[in-house]
Length: 258
Ligand SMILES: [Mg+2]
Picture (cartoon, rainbow, N blue to C red):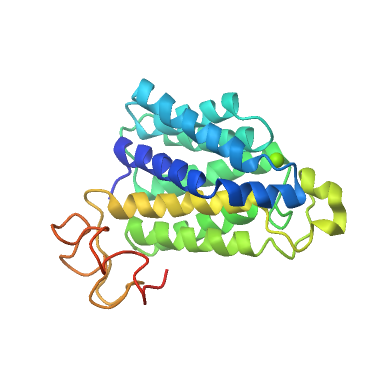
């Protein structure tokens, strides 16, 4: 499965939806150890990305990410815009001019994004920043891709790793960013940037899973309820009657873990 322009746009669109849905939560997290603007900043930035991508209609997946990154840098105040923007722009530049990208190329590009984040933030994993979600997410993505898993499964692994990484920031003391001013009082709070990063990788998992041409995983290796899996052979989300909205086939169906 390739990452094409439509999938890259869908990824950022899902991210914008997730940021909308979690805006207040992100704001609360940032209020606890920052200045309380992360939710509104990210929402404004993601809205601007949506508009920019619709206007620009980039022709390559790299151009989508470069456009999104540049938009976040120019439209979002605070630290998060430049950080996310630099990350996405670095990823887009790493992808070059190919119209689409392979899963391996995506891994490489997202590692370039991590390098950009680490450089701009002068941060490393364990500093209680978004890197604490980005790093395990891209590592998990890379492992899954190297292991031959399809992109949807790899992205799901990345999403889980990002969420675990974000949760693991709670006991950390912040060493970078505004939260570091609090010293030990930053302990016990979940990092807002790591939390929005978990949304970014969850959005990638959603977008790849729902993309036309998404490969199905091995039977029996599903996260959903038996018999109602998206991964079962022949049961795609696009099949008539097996949509996300059909009763009993939702992600939130009782018994569906994940
Ligand atoms: Mg803030």
